[in-house]
Length: 153
Image 1 (spheres, rainbow, N blue to C red):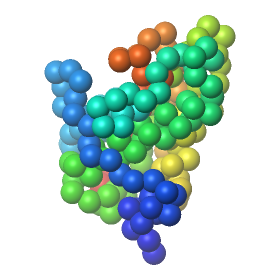
Image 2: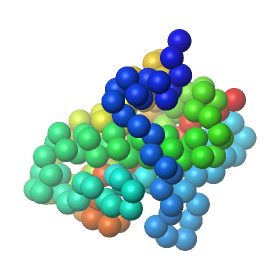
Image 3: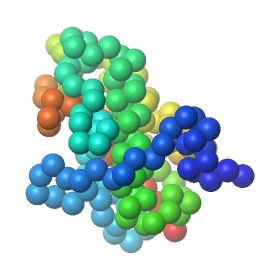
């Protein structure tokens, strides 16, 4: 059986360093067996790489990739909190926010970028509850923001 990081490499993905907060909050915390991330933006380093509204400036495929990047950043936060992604027993909940132009209604398809990654990495334990919400604006003009709840051992 492959480790989560080996599975990431097989997908040609790499776990980034956990991004720092952009405000006065903690990026991740653990309470009991739950690890909960703050909203993660599509950062690479210190740059938000997908900016603007889906359906106006950003195409759905780019939104999917932005959501996947947010999920990678959430996994980086979880690893920073618990030390090893092998401790994750289940992805419990994904909360996704999509900066949407008027009339854009494909928020679920955009958030599939995060959801698919979790299932690819964790199998059945990656299946989760989810919220996919369209919003008018997001911090730093990010196209997508994702928060994750994970159960750990």
